[in-house]
Length: 170
Image 1: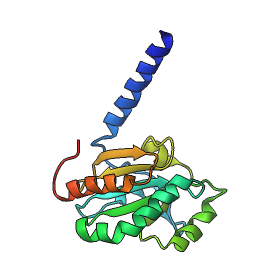
Image 2 (image 1 turned 90 degrees about the vertical axis):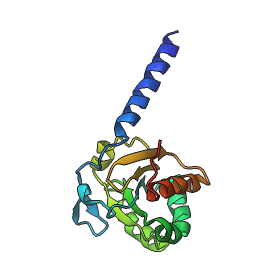
Image 3 (image 1 turned 45 degrees about the vertical axis):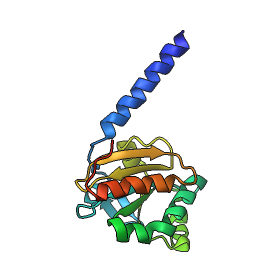
């Protein structure tokens, strides 16, 4: 009985945390751009169009698979919806030097930032990667998802299309 009550409490806490993130603005946190220059996350915007913020790491195979699969479709997504993808690496100081060579090797067209101290990650309650946020044109987080399975990018794109067409996401 205690296990059931504990599990129910955990489900309620997770649901409450996710409900609080929905409709939340992007927090203001200083991270680094891929050149190592300071960048405030409050400056992330896409001129009223949808954005995808994807937390990833060089050691995370599902993260790289997701971003590489989106990369193959990204030009069409940008043309059709104006969406912008912002990739936030959570690689720590030991691995951060691997980010730029990996990004360059994959020829990603994304904006890539480094969250070496995990401040942005903590501000958005990201516990594991990959973790993807969808942000509407008003800068409000309207959807989030963690983990990755082949084909998830198509579900994400359907949501991006809804936002681009002015529809809400429930």
